[in-house]
Length: 321
Image (cartoon, rainbow, N blue to C red; front, side):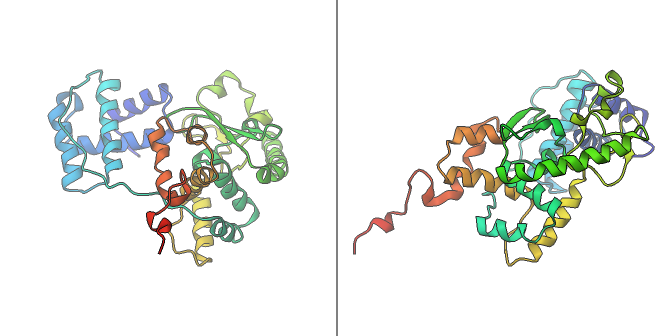
């Protein structure tokens, strides 16, 4: 946002000091600004629970935003009052609209193979890692050289959803391709280093270790084709590949097949979990690989399996004519 008010600029600075991700920062600032504009630019310190409830009701009843959007807006306002203004409020009496449970879309292996065959080498490897390791697209593109363990066939996902680190498995198919990909990334880094440019670094690492950008460990596996200015420090650097590049490539690949399902990058994470459960893997193990806090979140994939889960079959199939 350009021409941001002094108040929102201060909110942004505080969020960066607390280490919030840029994605969260952008979303929270958007909803805090919308909240202020909704109440005719009143200062948030002059408002409270009633105004928050009115705004959320407006989003639900007038704008008809999705349940998850309501949650993000509420989280932004909770941060504003509890973390920034140090004014915690009690229950505001707002209840989300009921959300119909939707089963995740899952591809079978022949469908996955058909999509992969339509992708170029780089994009195919990225989609293979989403399916082979259960990664979110953001997690995959943020991977650095130090996060890949080719000997143990494991991947360390750092600062994932909920700001958690976790480990997941690495497919041998992907492991066979990664050395060449890593070598290409190293070559890009070496060329960048000649101009004192390197990969974008997290939080205060750039200040604490000024030469970290020269370390191979910090290089992205899938670097962007262009350099850019770091949004926090203003330093010229090379970020990872943008998610829109892969989403567009995937859309073209799906269009080239005869698959009549809504396929997104997240569909391959759904397929990873479902196929592991289908193969008899313990649900707790799948929960850990996915990084879910609650096993009930992982449980949704059992509803996709039908007769393949826990030996359950239709009673009609046991009927003797």
